[in-house]
Every structure is written in structure tokens, then in C-alpha cells.
Image 1: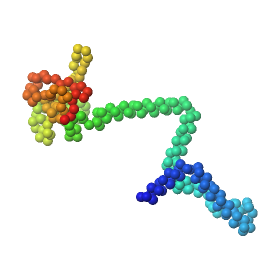
Image 2: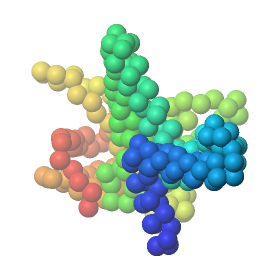
Image 3: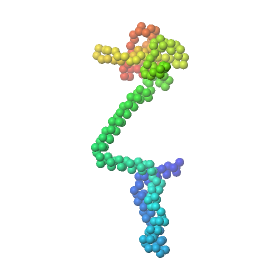
Image 4: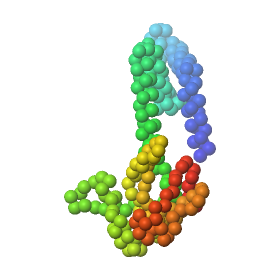
Length: 236
């Protein structure tokens, strides 16, 4: 593990010290070629022939540089940095294209952020109830395979039947679709819910009380209203 960490640090150092490392490697190659050439000169070759023979003996200089570069640094990081430098040079020489690209990226990031925030609030964010991981929603299935909000629509007698036969659940609550209520100054949204709605979900009011069991004995018999404001109800 320690040897692997040292190797990684060495490769990172080689990536960010590439120019200096390549210059040092070129100097080593030049010294090695000079030593080979001097050896061939001592054997009786001319300086030109000795340099040619030395290069032939050493092999490909360019291939040696490439092999050393791969061993010294991180090829993926080197490629990324090269692409980044090329992109910066291209954008610097094309200010109009740069402005369009920046605006396009900003618009795309803004749209994605907005969509994710909405999706997170609807689908990913836990419900503000006592035990959100154990809350499920009943859904009906139709033979024609219709889909939409109609799958979640049940009548009040159906709710009573399911509540009386829902042995697999601790409790069963019901709520209507949101509907508008015209007030004196503005329009507000309301929902009709079952009497056990708040108690089953573990929600307690900040002020006052929720529904009593007897207030749910007959639909519409006890018109009790609970007003919801920011921070008004919290899970127990």
C-alpha cells in the first residue's frame, strides 16, 4: 500500500514537472549518444559515422521519450491537461464562440438545477412525516392498462372497505385532490382528508388540535378546518 502511494505521488510529480523531467531525460539521451559515438570513434569511425552508428544502436529516440513519459506521469491526466490547454487557446481566439458556449452552459446548468430541485422535492426528498420509509401509496390497475392520476382515485366507500381489510398496514389514510377555495382577498388550496390523516402520519399541529375520531363518523357532518402554514405542522 505504501509503495503504491509513493508510486502515485511520483507519477503526479512527474506530470506537473513534465518540462523539467523531459529536459533531464533529453540530456541523459544526449550524454548516452555521445558516449556511444566516442566509443565508435575509438574503433576507427569518423565523427559522422560514429554519430549515425550510435543512434542506430540506441534505437528510436522518440519512442524512448514516449515510453519514459508514460512511465513517469499519468497518461490520462496528461491527455486531459493537453485537451484543456487546447480548449483554452481555442476559446481565447474565438470570443464570440466563447460567449455563446458560456451562455449555453449556464442555461443548461440552470435548467438541470431547476429540474433536479423539483424532482428532489417531489420524488427524492423524504415526506415530512414520522416514518417516511414505511409510507406507501395505493394504486389501482385497469385492464386497458390506462395510466395517470386516475390510478390513485378511490371512492369513499372503497376507502372504508380497504381500511377495514388492510391487515398488512398499520393504518390507512385518504385525501382528496387539491381544490381551490375563494377567499375574501385571495384563493387558497384545500384538501379533504380522513380523520386519522394527521395521527397516522405522526403529524402534530403547532397550535390547536387535529381531528377527533368522532368527527370522521359521517362525511361532511363535522366541517372542521386545519390551516397549514410554513412550519405549522411537524412530524411527531
